[in-house]
Length: 341
Image (cartoon, rainbow, N blue to C red; front, top):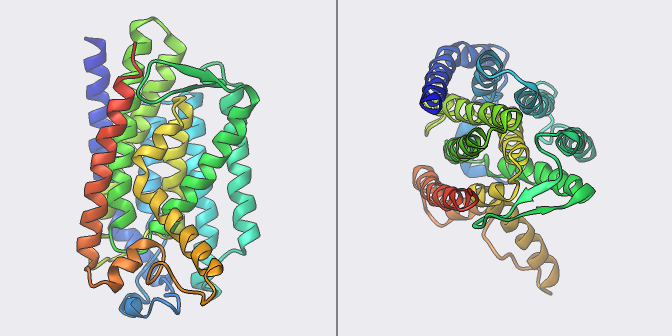
């Protein structure tokens, strides 16, 4: 009966997060408009010129509810670090957005500044996980009941995951509703995964571990429903963009949840469309440099811009990515269920 009560609390938290994000969305959009915080459009995206001036930093719409509701309803040191990591990446992205819109520098923070900020947060979060008694150095193996103890090697793996996921989400945030819709499904899947692990830990009387996993389930569920409130205003034609404020925070929240539930490889499954954005950019660069005539593998990268050049609408591309993420989420949850003893 207790598990059902906890599930009800998560549902209440999720509904509250959706209502909270819907409530603050209009004033955030208005405020960003007043500050002339319009998203600058990069020169090579001429087909997006009509979006120039659309307010950015919309990630605040889902970051704020996620932080406050998680800490209000599931406060412990695991959830505190998870929301701190999310807010930390959000602040880094906010600085990047601020430089773009106020100082009129399309590139925002310099690459080394952005990388150092991402690495700094990732290292702190990863060392916390390694030193935590509830998390430690063991990593779950998808589709099996096995775990592998990586020792100190879990730290660089976790750092890589944080940096990879945050950058991949950032690269995917180039079309109305694209990152938000995929992110809502990915965070909902991580919420369900954490709840499965919580139920198992509670069944075996692992109180401290169960408490941390429950907080992660609520945290990810709240993130998912806060994103729905943001998406209400981000679907095509978008009223506001999430900006780096939102994309880095979203990536950080997914990475934190999967690392802290000791299943970092789950992020590779539920974030498949984000990973493809990064892979498509890498393939484009490598192919361009290896071919003598410097040909391009795709018309443009990341891959969603290639699809635009092929004539697909933003709504179609977002639908494709959403369906693929939903399928990947089901695969991820199957792998989690197979983890359970």
